[in-house]
Image (cartoon, rainbow, N blue to C red):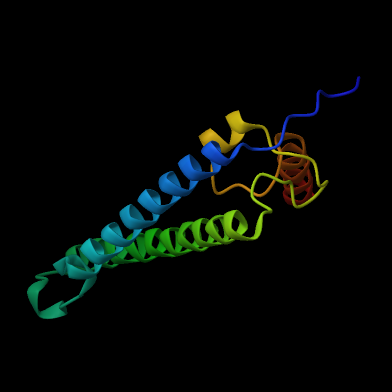
Length: 131
């Protein structure tokens, strides 16, 4: 069954996506700054009365570090999408070279894969984990 090829992105849409990405970038950076300023990022064992509190605090700190890693990854994807807007490759699937549908870009403007290629990638990852 042939798929309907989507149309290239309009300049007005590119401007809109650039604004969305810049706003998301600012939000990610603001959250990162908040996390760095929170006292929970520092672990002072003198303030913890027992081992349960220490374990709980270490768990929270570990969770926050994982969140920061995800934020860093999202920031890299956003920066890559902004660069793709500048170099004219935004909205083109990195895997198959087809246009990424505007609806997909509206949902995930930092994406680099069309829905078909993303689904293929997820199936391969699932198969890899299952083996």
